[in-house]
Image (cartoon, rainbow over all chains, first blue to last red; front, side, top):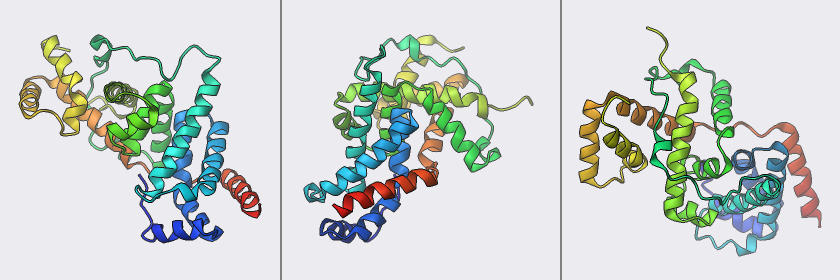
Length: 198
Length: 81
């Protein structure tokens, strides 16, 4: 979750009154976070850019509806998640996997296959951009129903209940998908971070 | 995994709640006892925790310049209306 601006309430009020500069300040604070979220949900750069633009345009048009009972960023994320899910559903309509498809609940499929200790601070052996690429590639390999839940819970740090509400899922479904996402990502990252031969 | 399958399965099933500190204290204690004897589960717990931390701590890349320009243009058009 990004750092919030101290004067966010003032900026939102000014933007609502038509101050474009204040709205631009809010955008600059959150644009890369919204783009990353959109990219990780849709898995497609073109869609992510559409989601980014549409989310900010929609936010501007609907500023009057923002009640201030949550952070502005939380409200923005809700808009972006809706936009991203619409894109994803549109793209996946032609394919066989649905975002709402029940997830396999067989415990055997959860059992980790690769169990190797990781080096101490292996992430420090990579430059920041390189590490970011590794993490992005791993998340790209997850199926949308897993990466969407993971992004909202572990990256954006929404609660299980908020995530369930945003995605129209039950709380147990969010928990189940999150566990699977975490285990799959751990396994993906294992090849980069495992301790080398002694 | 080398240790008893049933117990390991349970650790994996409760992993998220354990890492979030939301596991029932009795279950958490049983899980920790299991970790004392099962190296494999210890590794899975540790590396899953580190996986979550890495993602949580990673700052997003700056917005690509051309994406930013197009966003600004779209907003300018909207604000002119």
